[in-house]
Structure formats: C-alpha cells, structure tokens
Length: 68
Image (tube, rainbow, N blue to C red; front, side, top):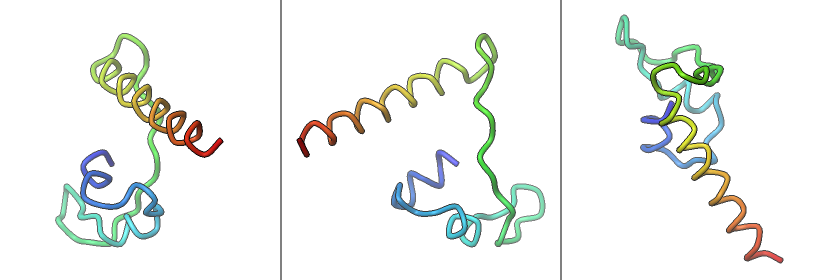
C-alpha cells in the first residue's frame, strides 16, 4: 500500500487503487485489496509503521491548525 500511495494521490480510494494494483503472485491487474492490521509491537516493520503513522498524524494536525 505504501508504494501505491507514493504513486497516487493519498485521497485515492481503495476501489481505484484495486483497479490499478497488480498482483504480486500472478501479475494481473484488478486485485482485491484491503487494509492490513498494523504490525504488532516488537515485530519487524513496527518501528517504520509507527514512524509513518506519527508523520501522517503530524501532517493532519498541521493542516488542521492552518484551517483554524
């Protein structure tokens, strides 16, 4: 998902991403996609996920403050 969102507008909905996504197994387009649960604390990828979530939340708060 992270790679797809880097290529598309973050406001792109899951249905549009699914149409554009390509299956990692067979290579076909039109995959079924769904958000995954975040990695559990202490597992590989957790620190990266947490850092990304913190940056996303900070960006949201910055935009919200600008609108006040």
